[in-house]
Length: 236
Image 1 (cartoon, rainbow, N blue to C red):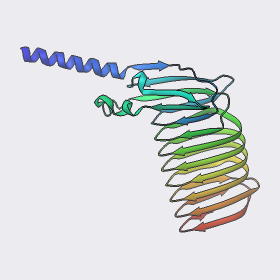
Image 2: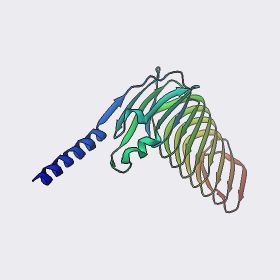
Image 3: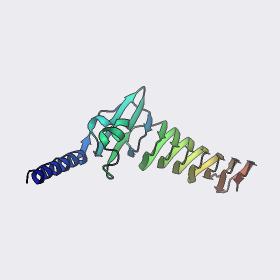
């Protein structure tokens, strides 16, 4: 009987600990005076442009101290501390763990998303110049209206960008993908290498370079001014 009761107590304690770890949590840290954004470690960001700067974080299965939301030198960093993933034998315990950040920004000049993180734009984001970088399995989906746009994706990451721009530079490498054929550009320069894929659009001029199995496809009435391919690359 003692063994049976002890087993029930142990099961109850384990269940209590599990539920405590799995509880939902909402944070509203103060963020201001940032113009660049860096997202990493599996965080999911939903980006809106507005007249204020704010972030609301919804999390499950993490401690408050596991979550990073801080501004340093004009850069807003949204991430999860390494011990949050690996500490206290919790790494594989909850398949439903997540950190979601609902971010409002006045302006951004650079967005970098890496390490399996995701960023989704809600509405059109307007900027003069905007650099968008997706790395290491990350995924970005954005609708933008800008003058000059720089897009890059590497190491299996994806960047899906639509909208309008005067000039676009798109680079992909390491099996990554840049889908910008719905980004209406006046002039576009595209570079794909190492098995990566780039899709672009231009009204006036295109400059294309593909190497080592990289692939570029283009659409729109733009004229191909330069087309360079090597080592199995293709630009069509």
